[in-house]
Length: 159
Image (cartoon, rainbow, N blue to C red):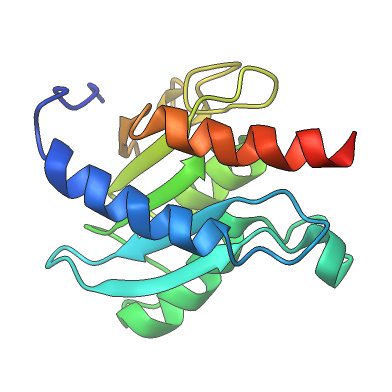
């Protein structure tokens, strides 16, 4: 699946990323601030999630997984999020990328690239790997500086 052209829907993608940044700021203390929001095809916000691994003592409690779990209940197509868009402040990891493919998400929009664990093109490209039964569109780098700054601030405060 080809990447979307830079100008295609950029204003909308940035507005949605601002919402994801607002959600990231709700992340429980001690968890890495990442926010994810699922939007329906008509632009309605279906669900959101933050990282909660530390808060819930659950290694699968990433923002994307939390948002997917809530969105499938709201969307009404069983476990499928076809035609929906997930907007997340940090490039999804392999687990989250797999969950997004499994949920048949239509598009992934992320902010900051993650060269150490990113699975939408940085470290690996799990969502567009050969043989995938579903390949969502991917757009990275939306409000990248703002998303990266939120993460940098968190890690600076830990030092």
